[in-house]
Image (cartoon, rainbow, N blue to C red; front, side, top):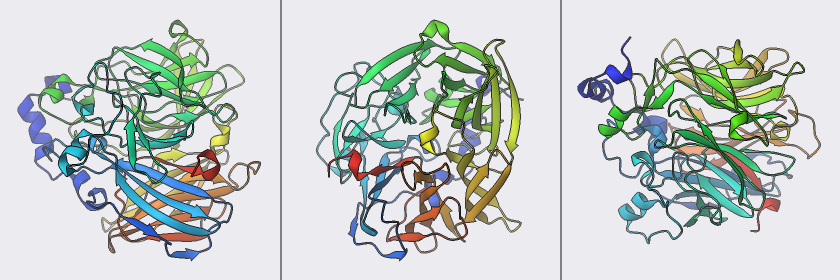
Length: 474
């Protein structure tokens, strides 16, 4: 096999340039217009307890410099939001996250706010905000990793300012934090191309960084996601590593599969220091998204992850080279070893769970976005639910030429049981160039309870969240 480091620049260029960039067309194709629509049409009945905004963000490139080297992870951000109140869908809005490239292209005023003391690496130079959207400390933020600062947004999703969390953020934030349900804090792992370490960060409920731990690394990996157990912060130093050759060639996201890298899971005690990290070696894999982690009675830690056995080897535009599967890695901090159990081979991504369990208890259910091919080479997009105790699954198919995205779980009541709640996701309809928000009860995937109709397509993107109105002033 050819190692990335031994590939010549011409070989690397040819590997991606010989085919069209799929992340600029079909369900990924960007939309050009910002729209606002009030009093959306609804089929079915929206549960009256859902009062708030269903928000999501994803790449929507405004002007890719070179389609051959464009990577899905690096597009300008666009946020989408639907506000629900008392059984009505009051509005839909989509807005560009106004990074430097967007405002220059559209002739808009520059966004105020701090800039990095040390400029971000090339792939984050325009400070995009395309990966996640959260409410914290009374504010709404769009996030991206790798060196980009967060963007503060208004309730109506207009870009307000770049943010460093009132001066408490130094260098980078994460694109995939997780909220501790007991404290309201956001936990994440930050990285940059030019760092020889990762940084564990805790953003308190008031919106300020209260904890920062630099963790020395072997290599310079992507660490997109992490998980919390009762005792540990869990993260993965995997096979997708920074690649100087790709950066020199102008690739938007210069990371590649490293065949020689020692893969390991890191376990950091929740309030620990960098010298307390334990590394548990594992087979080469990429694990960008983690469903969750939990402690076992014997001291080991289980982490359920979407994993790949090859990515960014020949295609540097996005995660295309291997199907995703759900694996359970059992990590033993006493030996530094791990074991792997395959939970499901069904291709799936974007895992979510009942977030009341994060760092508190073992999860039983997971919810995933799944896309498979039929014998006629048609893509079938489904919402997939797995019962990890029984080893069973069920799904809801969105229909021909319809593509679902990450589903968010919202408990029916604050004290309802795990899996007793609503699954909400955006669905893009290519045939009619429109979209919907689909709401299902997690215990009945036979038919949505409601479908909110949006008169514009929503490109496939990354992450989002449900923000109840009580979390923010309107």
